[in-house]
Length: 98
Image 1 (cartoon, helix red, strand yellow):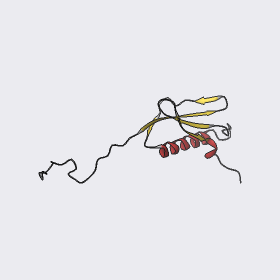
Image 2 (cartoon, helix red, strand yellow):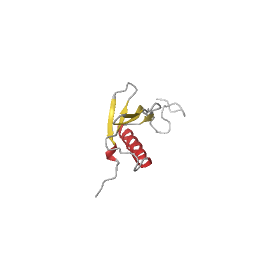
Image 3 (cartoon, rainbow, N blue to C red):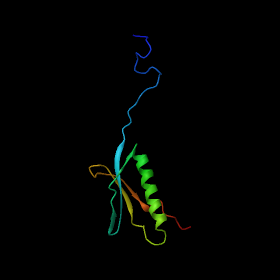
Image 4 (tube, rainbow, N blue to C red):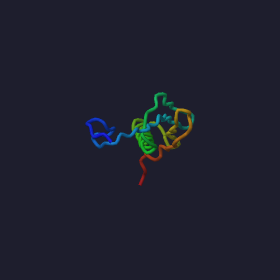
């Protein structure tokens, strides 16, 4: 084993790991209407994808507050082959009446 400086792959003791990112699309759909995500986004995992879908739903609900009923809307999270990865209902972010 060599002890020369720079001879080992992890001189500083740090371990390099390759992070696998997922490229997903966040389509929104409701009765008679579909909003297609043509750009998509890279996410680390399905937890991040879920958070992004919830943020998107919340943003749309807040922007159209009182002008549109999102009760039956969903965010369809799909991969590059259009396989459904997650289905998030807008109701998860809609205000509840107490």
